[in-house]
Image 1 (spheres, rainbow, N blue to C red):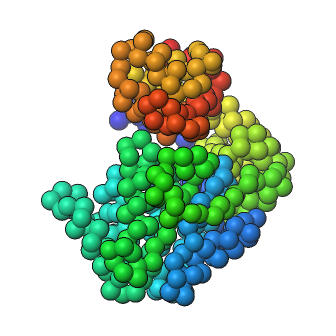
Image 2: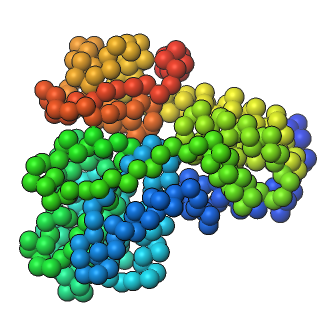
Image 3: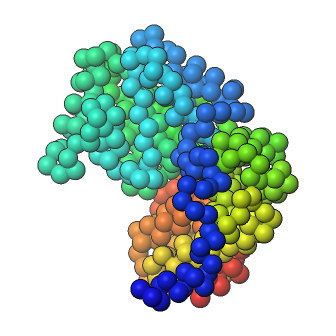
Length: 382
């Protein structure tokens, strides 16, 4: 105990802000899933979403729509806002949001729809999928309600044949439950997943595209200023530092990074017992953020995943999934399914980007691109 107290004394811990003193007015404003009260620069997309849903409010079918755009362009937030507004104004349509990165199975996805309708998820064992499906669709049919399902990160359904089954289950439910009105909003970074849809699914899907372009510098600046206004007390952070965070965000092409940096610099200032955020707090955040995060991520990979990541970093010419899988098998003797699981893990952790390019010998071919400096990746692996 005395060692602990002495350590605190040596750190100057007594100088850190006392309980109740903080530069944060609302810490939640910097959370990744926070929905801001002011959602700007997406009026056109919000209008398109509303138009897609309008037919279902008049006893018609919603218009299937692909919500497409780069990461952190407001796609998920827009869908959640429009769903919330609709639920407050009408009970004619059930709006279910499912994150397919977390729920990758047919049962898992429909359990989330069940939870949305009935307030709880069905048991994971002992209840067949057919019973859950019938309960959902019969309830909707009996109550004359439509169903729209937003499938976020829908590309995660590609590798286990879940994609076509889920789309078919939702879009063709009216063949078993007469008059049922259903639709799907896939949320994705590109539309290549459509190459994996069966012809009979694609014919009934027939979506429109709602495109979310990257935010401009001015838009990023205004969004960050809104978060600052809501998240910090007045005069805590200077315009110069916000401008610098804006440039860093623009270069990274990820708005979430800028919002997270605001939180980090605020924490750095409080740890320094400062009442305002200074340049050194931003410098510390930028210097540590990329390398520390990369090291932490790589540290939690298993050996096979590290071997694949190193292979990608050391061989930029292996940017096709087919040739990469052959080289991976040659070096590790691992199965193709192990390769696919490793690729999905690396993409989920945002170490790589993948883009579907069409049918390959063993399914859908993908381009593989490393998101970090190859030398830095290799250094963290070693």
